[in-house]
Length: 304
Image (cartoon, rainbow, N blue to C red; front, top):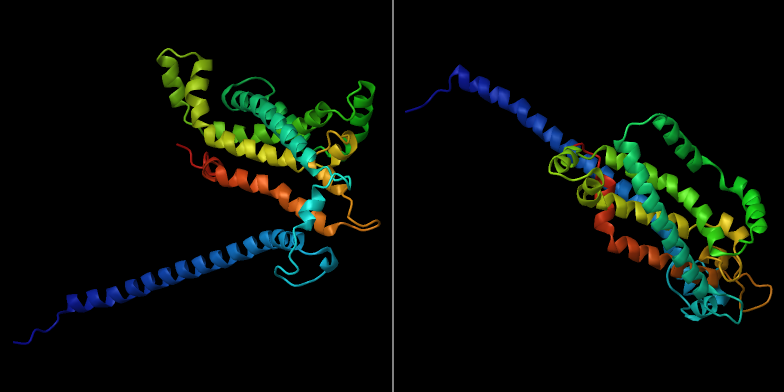
């Protein structure tokens, strides 16, 4: 027995065709968008990593082949790393690494202690001139560092601080603190304050609620801010080049004053070796705390 499709079946089949085409177009657009995103990510990664790759390649290359343009490892040698640590040539890279670690740790700790409380107050408390305070913090972060070198030099000379650690730590704090305050303020603003109010109802003081409830929830943002502050202090050169001495100079200043194994020779390969060594602590730091960094950067993006 033959079954003849009625008008209703024909209509349903006709309506199904545009839906199928629409779904196919949507999948095609999503696939194309994914391809574009992947290509963009590859370009960005290559743009950022190729200079670092070339630095590593040059750091392992013999001095006689410094300007060789071969894009892979050739004329391999460890002598450049020995030159970077050679105190006989006046390259005090080991001491400079310890100085940078000490300065960066002090700057990060102090900036976090002050910045966390300041950010909490700016995000949670209502007081007069709060907008002006935020504007002053923003203005401090935008102030050019080169304009501070002369007055800082004069000030620290008058009080006998030239070439000391405090002469390097205090200016770095002034540059790192605005970044710390702004990053943590934006995070604290998006936190669910119902948790703090519930803790206050349960008998906690405001300080106890901050220490037991808010601060643990803010750990990802605090870790992220700490790493950003440390990197900023680690890479600082302008002020350190004028206010440091041979005993307190950080790695950025030490590398700039490198001497080669031959007189009147620019030690490009040794500088590349030192740059590779200086980059390693930052890479290790980011790899160790990468999950917290991602959590801190994405936290506060969704209000909940």
